[in-house]
Image 1 (tube, rainbow, N blue to C red):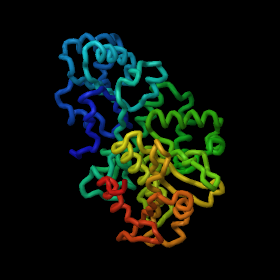
Image 2 (cartoon, rainbow, N blue to C red; image 1 turned 90 degrees about the vertical axis):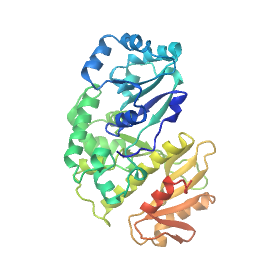
Image 3 (spheres, one colour; image 1 turned 60 degrees about the vertical axis):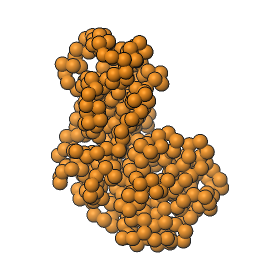
Image 4 (cartoon, rainbow, N blue to C red; image 1 turned 45 degrees about the vertical axis):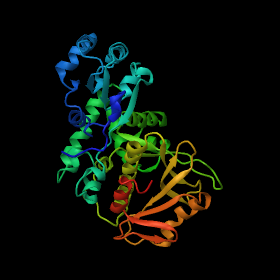
Length: 386
């Protein structure tokens, strides 16, 4: 079994929410880390139905536990009413809880008790390169980083089933979409816009729905953890900046599958887009696991679209940018490729500048560190970048 970076040691003193998309490995992780904890798996029909009929059953059973014992409720969004019982048990019996789930949308929509800050929030992402012995970049770009997908030679049928299950279990079950056909079309159009500035009106025209509906669809993807927004860095020094966010699916394999892309070939535009997506995916997980909410990930683009930097890691308190990263799938980076980083450096001279590429060895180019992607990832997870 692969060893995950997220350890959840904070549960020694606090209760936790653990969120993550389906099949990121939440249940496997919790069983491995806390084999002696009392476990309630709400994916089991009999367990779920029992608590739906009588949420108080959780309190009645857990009152028999000793103070300080740990209870895991997996897929807690299936029975939101349980959170009132969890709250009572935390306050009156001193129990610790880990509440895991793949969507907070249903909890928010139902007005469920989110424990008023009494539980810390963590996210389990798909696998990251540091969790995989003999990590293979090509496999990651083609298969994605969900454990069931990365570890097989051809995951296409699994990915197809995964997307279908998500539509049925997360979208349809929660009754958040009235026209499933239009939503399915939206998923494909959103894949075309993956890693791009979100333009609701253009997407709405392609889908045959209103811009308002498209915004709601994007919100569904975000709240069910199928996608996320990458915000624009908006601290203006000299140049006017883009303010709109980019959108990414949570795993690089999802847009590949929706757009019927098979094996990605190095040197193509599609390969370059997938490489950028993958790097953003790794950076997002790294920041969450290593810094929590103390660091932020964003991108930088001037309003005239003349200059852009793919990823910035900044300090939340000061807003200062620690590292600026540009991703190129080229195996020969030239000076013109670094113009975005150079422009950013003119306004933020204290920022470390990094260019990622498919070159074989690292080098310095006009004050910019040029790193092969895999070597950069090794340094990133070894805490040598930040």
